Length: 215
Image (cartoon, rainbow, N blue to C red; front, side, top):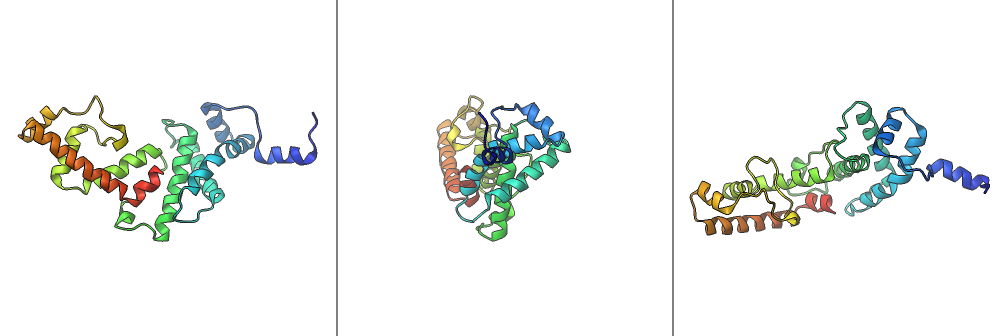
């Protein structure tokens, strides 16, 4: 069926394609400076980014500006071999665009209670990385006893802790072992961890940046 000029023009402008590209094809298209691939990215990835941008209710952000800046950064990083490929391109682009939003919120002065000093963005991070990093920052502000038992519970060798909603892991340190290391009773170790973890969850629920990242 022949399309009229208006419909055809709209399709070309917004990159309407039935074809779906895999990760390798997307990255190859970016490296080759392929205009069709850029239009494909706009068409397929902008709606999700727009929804993410609009989830930041505390500040008006232009979703197209955020997307354009995020995509430009992503393209530069990919061409400079700074993208490791550990996440999908869409996840990577979303993380960068989220960082753009957080920086704008920081500049607006709407981050309170010392959060400005804690805001650290990294274009190589995924959203889950950002959540874990923010949780670690809040955990490190707790008293030494709580930091110690939380670190022990979730693994001394790990440089992160689990998200509260993930619950326990098979790799979690047993309370018997924690009690031995702290020279306390097992029940005391279990109760201390429970109290400290509840404090951490309260800190998370009250933290502006955590709520924005988890939204």
